[in-house]
Image (cartoon, rainbow, N blue to C red; front, side, top):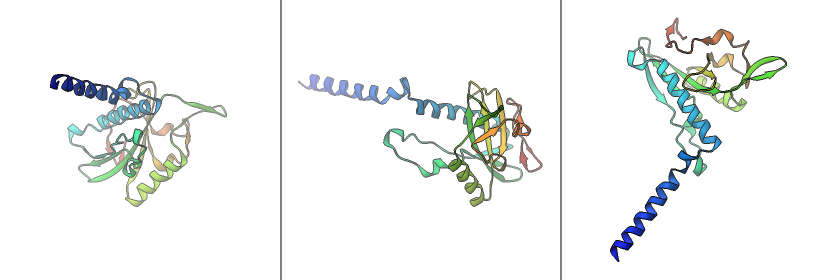
Length: 186
């Protein structure tokens, strides 16, 4: 009888584990977007080349997955990364956004990068913490290899839809490591 009961419990445990992994095997749209965002964040972290000791990753917002519990973690509303330039001790925040499409409005190419409430929250975070906030905006098919990359000060990204012509000065080589030049990251 013990053998049958043990087998029964082991079978139930196996089914529980299979159900827990369903989101990995069959992710919904929200989870796919979250994973794409994480891949892009990792790509941006790698551009800071933490192993070369010019920058230190101070914080990386976890985006802890509480989707199925409908729980909001307030800290996850902050910009994704806090990076410190080691020589100057200057800390700045980076919000990473990856988009696989561009929009056309009035004949101008643009990208919808955030909602107005998010933009206001990033501005407030920068002001409250006396930090510069940058938007790392990637456009392309693959978050780990964006076709285009922009590093935009939040003050230049005040609208949910950014025209590419308005942010062209913030475009950078998507493969080049990020540097700290004259008090700014470039």
